[in-house]
Length: 216
Ligand SMILES: C[S@@+](CC[C@H](N)C(=O)[O-])C[C@H]1O[C@@H](n2cnc3c(N)ncnc32)[C@H](O)[C@@H]1O
Image (cartoon, rainbow, N blue to C red; front, side):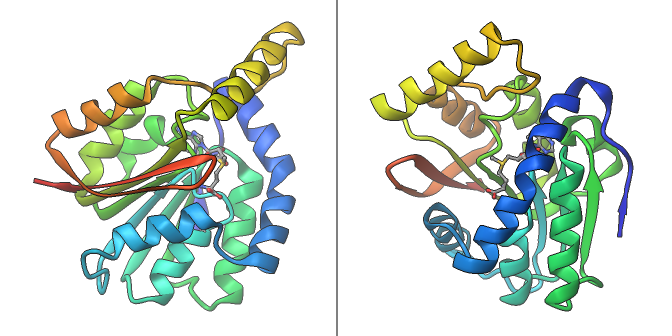
């Protein structure tokens, strides 16, 4: 089930990731979960996920919440600014016969948060670097999370820093409608802890830092 439409301020993000959604779907079909997603899952499953509810923010084509549902989670809500991503995620949910437990929304989570319920587990996989207002995104995500908050962010290393900063500079120069964001990742972690969470799992790939928190 899906509803709502993407609001204008994020039309660039919608178009960019909707175009990429076919590639994401192809990779998911061919390779399954990416390495950082396997780490996320490992961290989330430090606690039983049976009968838990999942909120997958910036859900992409749905790899994480589909896996959690197949492994015993009760229900999921997947939300993404990109309509194309949501369509692909819904399509996969039908293929895996999960459609009765998987709900979808198109749009900006920060704007739609008031229309969503709380969840046991909230996931933000490679999302915090795609949204300008990190503070608002964290605030709304934490407020919806009853137990586990799991996320990935670009790893703090020269390769990722230069890669991101170059994309941002090019995007500004050529006035692209979407560009990624390089936030202060140390401050982000501190902000999550300040909202009443404690770190329970940390891992990384060359490109991504994986962090899982539990509400204290
Ligand atoms: C890099 S993709 C990652 C998709 C998926 N989580 C994955 O790892 O395969 C980031 C996604 O987050 C979505 N996104 C970014 N900010 C968002 C927000 N505030 N609300 C909903 N979706 C958001 C984008 O549209 C995009 O599809």
